Length: 301
Image (cartoon, rainbow, N blue to C red; front, side, top):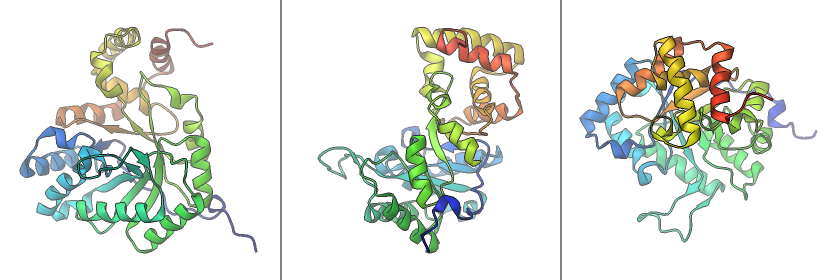
C-alpha cells in the first residue's frame, strides 16, 4: 500500500499554549540574576502566561541556559509551563566560528540542538520545537523522520515552524503534522494578512504564533511617516477605549480569526500586563480597519 501522507493521518492532540506567550529573545540583555529571573518567571505565571518562547541562538546561545538556571532552583515550576524553542540557524559567534551564518535542518544537527536545549532548560521534554527559518536545502522526509524519532523518545511533544511560507509549511506538514507557524505580524508589518500564512492557519485549524507584535518598539518610537500615522490613529482609539497603545496593538492582533498567540518581548512585568489586558478587549470591525488604513496610508480597495 502507498505511504499515507502525514496530513491525511490522524493528528496528535493540539498543543496547548497560553493565549499570550512570553518571549525570551532578549533575556540576556535584561541583566537579571538567578533570583530575579526566578521571580520574573513566577510573576509571569501569576498573570496566566504559561508558555515561554525560546530559541537556541537567543542571547548568543545563552538565553536558554539562563532560563534553565532559574528552573533548576525551583524545578516544580516546570509542571506549570510550556517550553517552546527553535533550532535550524547556525549563527556565527565566538563559540561557533562558522564561516558564514547559514541554515541547517539535517537530522544530526536538529537532534543535537534539541538535546542541547533539553540540557539548557533542565527538562526531559520540550513541549514544542520549531524550525526557526526555512532551510532551502531541507529534505522534508528526512527531517520528518527525525521529528518522529525524537517524539517517540519522549524528547519533543509537538513540532512546528517559524517564518515559513504557506507552501513551505505544507511541504513539511505533509510528512509530519505541524502544530503552528510562528510569523511576524503587527500594525506596522502586515504581510501575513496577505501572504497566505494566516489563511492556511485557519484552513488547518492551527493557531499561529506572532512575533514582534509591537514592531520591535517602532510603534512607540519611530518617526517615519507610517509609524506617526499609526500612533495618531491608535492613540485616539486607545484613549476612547481606556487602554494603552500596547494593549491596543495586542488586541488588533488577537482580533484576527486565526486565533493567534502573540509573543511578548519585554522583561517588564507591566509590559506583560498590557499584553494580557488585550484578552479583555474586543475591537469592532471599524476600529480594526482604521488601524489597517493608518498603517497602509490608504483606504481599503
